Length: 109
Ligand SMILES: [Zn+2]
Image 1 (spheres, rainbow, N blue to C red):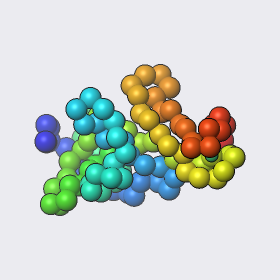
Image 2: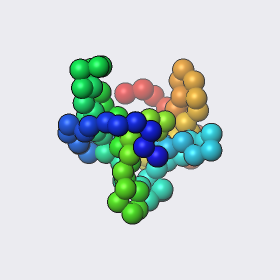
Image 3: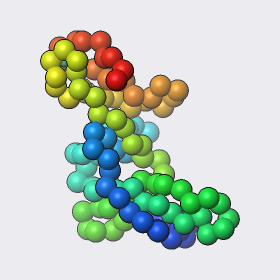
């Protein structure tokens, strides 16, 4: 839902090795399964605030809006087996929990 007027100055693809988690009924889930297309939008602050970057979601009917509650999440690959790790998004200081079927402990890199 469009909650306020905004002007998009520029739009870009989600960077490689990132995905979007969308908030649905208090729970975050990977938007890759949602059927939505996400992009990054540069929103004009129009002199009242700095320009800012927001996630912009386009639904299956082509309608788009800024999705302030959704989050950009980094994909990680398991250092042991090389597979893309599973992710769970929680609300908090360290919001993304990574895990792998092979039970390896994730390394930061
Ligand atoms: Zn693994």
